[in-house]
Length: 139
Image (cartoon, rainbow, N blue to C red; front, side, top):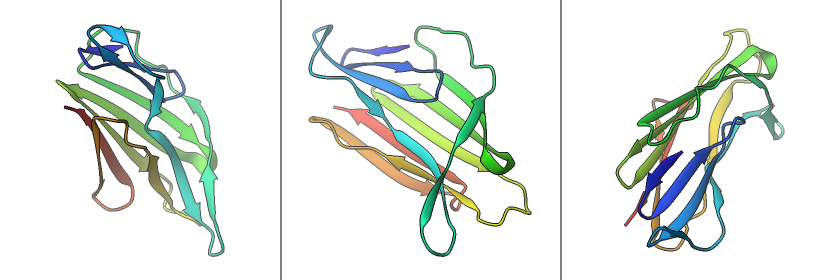
């Protein structure tokens, strides 16, 4: 769990981050998942989701972590690493994909995130399509 005066973030075992907006130490509105993430590939006709099969042992729960890393195995022997970086009023999530060279349809990291009132989302693609990053800041 990460606490900021404007939000609280809880990381769930499936790699999703639940964000609860706060005002004066009290929850306001509904919590939301940030970001929605998936690995996708294109088979020449359409996009498909590469499903996560299992997560490695997650870190023990803590309050005010600076960084949380989760590793998982997906279909077709594809590995994925999620990193949640907390700094002040910002949450940065990075996804990096490592897959066998023999894979027929390469994966790409895909985030889904919708702005929340008063919040700014910055989405940027880093080092090709295997590593992707999204950042949320609260003013």
